[in-house]
Length: 306
Image (tube, rainbow, N blue to C red; front, side, top):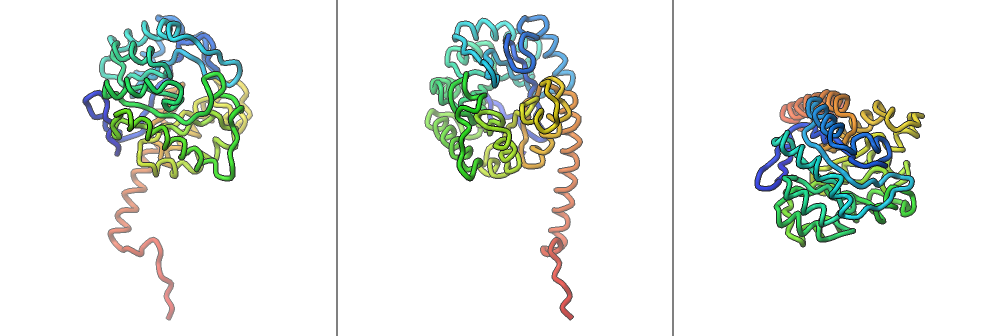
C-alpha cells in the first residue's frame, strides 16, 4: 500500500487506482474534438465516475504521435478552466489532476481546486511548474519523455543503448531530484515511465516487462498504455478507440509487474479487469506469506538424499 500526500491529505492506494482521461482538445490522437465543450465533457466525467474512476485527468494540449501542435498558455487555460471548475463543483471528492507543462496553467488550475499536476515532461520544459506544485503541497506525476510537446510522442528521440529501462530510470531519477530540490515532498511524487513517449513499440514493451525495476525507485508507479500505438501493432487493431481489450491486457500485465495507478480512456472495463487481477494478486501474496511462515524453505524443498 502507498500513501500519496496531496494538499494536506493522504490518499491511501489500497487497490488499483484508476484515473479517467479527459482530453478537452480538438486534436488528441483517439478522442480529439469529442469533449472540447462543457456539456459533453461533463457527461463523460459523470460516466467515468459512475464506472469507478478514482480520479480525472484533464488535458488541454495534445502530444499525439503525428502532428501535435503547441498551444499558448492562454489557449490551454481557455480550454481547461471551465471544465476543471465544473468538475470540482460537481465532484468535490474526486481526485482531480491537470495534464500540463505550463506554470500559468498550473496556477490557474490550482486556484480552481486541482489536486495534482501531471507533467509529461517531468518538469523539464518549465521548472516553474515544480515550484508551484511545491508551494501548493500538491501531488505530482513525473513522466519520462524526451523533447518538447510536439516531439515527445514521435520517434525523434527514441534512441537507446542496450538497456532501455536503465536510461528511463536515470532520467526519471533526474526529474525526481529536480522536484525534490524545488521542495516537492517525497511522499507527493508518483512516477510514470512514459509508455509510447520517445519510445518505439519495442522500447515500451521492455519497459512494461521490466516495470519492477522502475518500481524499485520506491515511488508509486502510474502507467498510461490506453489505446497506444504498440497495442494496435500487437493486436492488429488500427483504430485507436477500438483498442480497449488490448489496453486492458497491457494494464493487467503492468499491475502484475508493480504498477498501481492507471491512466485510461475506458474506465469500466479497466476497473473490472484490474479489480479482478488485484484480487488474485492479494490471494497469491497471502498464500505465499503463509507458506513462508510455515517453512522458510517450503518454496525450495531440499531433495531427499537418502
